[in-house]
Structure formats: C-alpha cells, structure tokens
Image (cartoon, rainbow, N blue to C red; front, side, top):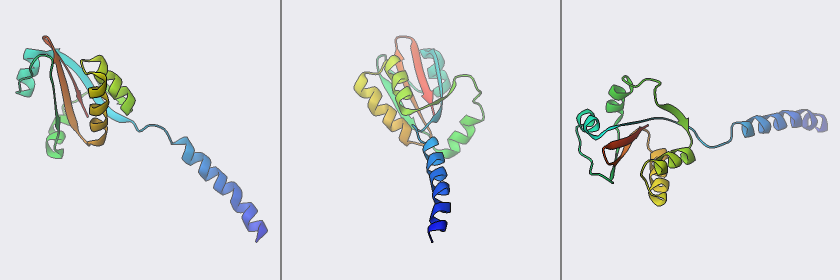
Length: 125
C-alpha cells in the first residue's frame, strides 16, 4: 500500500501544479471602437444623449450576424479589471465602470456605449 501511495503522490502533485497554472483572471474577447455620433446613430439605429451611456445584451441569433462582420481590428482579450479601466477612461465614473464591467463579464454577448460630445465609445462582447 505504501508503494502505491508513493507512486501516486507525484502524479497528484503534477496535477495540482498544472491546474494552478491555468488559474488567473478569466479573459473575454471584446471589440472596442469609437465613432462620431452621426456614424453611431446610423450604424446602430439609436440615439444616445451626450454624457450618457447605453447597454444591451445581444441575443445569440443576432450575435451570429454581428460576429460575421467583426475583424481583428479593435479586438482584445481582456479581463474584467481591464474592461473596467477602459470604461473609466471612456466617460464612465468609477462606480459605474465597476458595475458595468461586472455586468459585461457576466453576459455572453452584449454592447455598451458612451457618448462624450460628438464621440461615441463602444464595446462589444
């Protein structure tokens, strides 16, 4: 029995080591971009008041259509903290950026946009 335990021990240690290697913050594929307000309004067929933001969860069937048009431009692999930093640096307050980054991490596919003057910053996941 002791020989079996001693043979099994290195295997268990290796398994633990490799499982710890994959630990870390979860990464999400997101696309970021900015546009003029007129370009945004035309492309997304929606209005957005200056100084405000909008968000929406995207249904899988719509995501299938959208994702076919996405390129590598603006594509990132970010964790929730990086998403929060991006939101904060693009017009969101600290509390809003934290709350919305958490929401964005939880949903499968979504959209969030903020408007500052004539510029709209948006993120897709």
